[in-house]
Length: 86
Image 1 (spheres, rainbow, N blue to C red):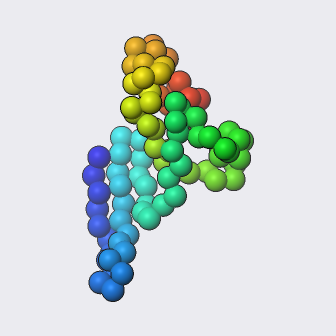
Image 2: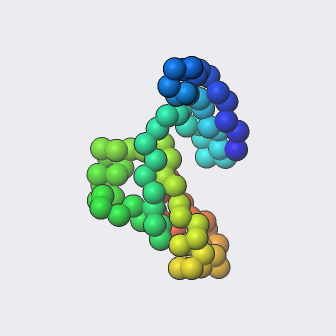
Image 3: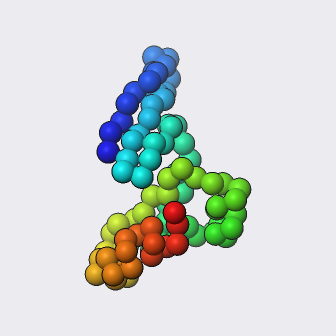
């Protein structure tokens, strides 16, 4: 993962940049929904995909470690496949 800083604001300390991951580039600042146990709570999957359409969803790795556990995630082909997200 790599972060490139593009611009800063000295008055507010705001900044804009790009995060590059193995899965693509993400322009910041950005809204990042959090998936607990591989599911974003309070938002229907259809709404998440069609209306919010986030460039990134954060996964709570501690919760995933506890349940469903890493061996199940590996057997499913990774977190993306386990949660049905491309």
